[in-house]
Amino acid sequence: MPAASWRPSASFETLRLRARLNALIRHFFAERDVVEVETPVMSVAGNTDPNIASFQLQFSGRTDGAPRTRWLRTSPEYPLKRLLAAGFGDCYELGRVFRDGEAGGRHNPEFTMLEWYRLGWDHQRLIDETAQLVQAALALVGRSATLTRVGYHDLYRRQLGIDPQTAEVEQLQAALGVVIDPAGLTRDDWLDLLMTHRLQPAFARDQLLAVHDYPASQCALARLGTRDGVPVAERFELYLGPLELANGYHELADASEQGQRFDRDLALRGVRGDALPPRDENLLEALAAGFPHCAGVALGVDRLLMALLGSDRIADVMAFDFARA
Image (cartoon, rainbow, N blue to C red; front, side, top):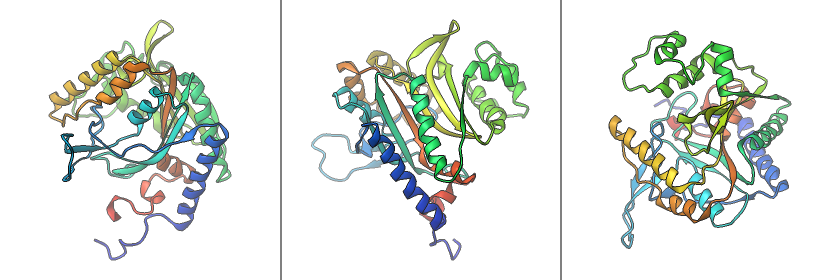
């Protein structure tokens, strides 16, 4: 290990900018009566998403029959939704989350996430507020960006000449332009590769781009709807230049449907030989008790700092990145 590995990976100026950004976030939501809360970092349930790996640990103390295995949160989504179901109202959390296997130029196994929920809103309305927060953050460094909206299907048609709803997998592979081992890749995996390798790199640096209404197969925890007669997942992702900053949903409120999605995730994880974290039964019970109509979004604070500074290294915005932790 290098002799200077004890030193911070980010500059002091950047760490002060992070503090100013945190203060801005809290002021932004205080003005809107959105309340800051804190929820557990360790849970008896994990994230079943096949594309996200959770850390797990063993508790050695008294559990009174509760599971000893606990899972570090990959986001605060499930407990925040339990608060909403209990009637708490608009809320947000700003804190650390953890994802196993994600370390590199733009990824760190622990990072800072901002997540918030708005009662009575859909994903389209939440796009505006998310963009307003990012624009306020940009002003901290004397920058600005305009918001542009584009439907997922329109983006692929315009930029790649491909209809993501109907294109054959072979068309998606050809459009990628590079040879990748197809073993284990689903149709949605090829669409994701087109986004990261062909579309994102061309996004304008000073443009906030909200891509909305994804294929129904990419619903995650979003409601399903239709757009121009095509089934879609009512969700969005917000980009500043090529960096994805936020992922938002018009939230699913159906406990039965959510349980089925958890089971589909676990089945795919089983095929891949991945860990099988327990379903979050507390979340399902909360949804069944009566979940309010709302929209929610998660924003990567480290990614936002990277975008503010024009950096492509997450280490540049963290006091100590994974290699120095």
